[in-house]
Length: 173
Image 1 (cartoon, rainbow, N blue to C red):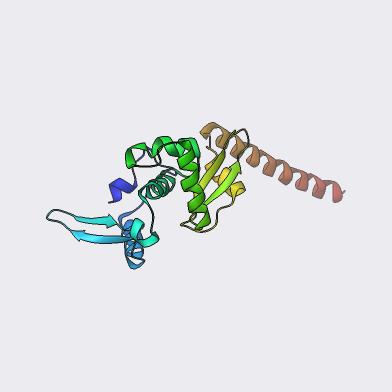
Image 2: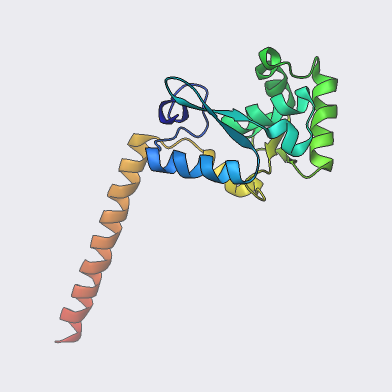
């Protein structure tokens, strides 16, 4: 389970979970009736019960699953990524299924982001979502940029300290 959760491809956000965290999440989902433990010969497996727990159609289930894996997306991105999961047939069907999820309080339309042409959608299974906070949290951090920012902050702190020392020296005269 842990290896599956920590996959690097097609994940947003990319996670680095410990075995205990995965186990805790599975127990919590099991208590809500969203997963069921299936004992196999070699390994313990879990089967999802999302469609039964929330009375979702196959298309809605595909949409929610992709939103859980990849985060906020446009209707066109969702349609493409849900194709192999038995998702909506076309863009109109995708929008219709998203509207049904919104009406049921399982998804939200975040509107257009800066520099984007289409509205983005996000699931609400983890609670309310703020478009502004989501934009900040999903902005890719450039290692060079963060290093530069850290250096600038250090220099600003040093300049402030030197000014304070200078004022103390000039004040003592």
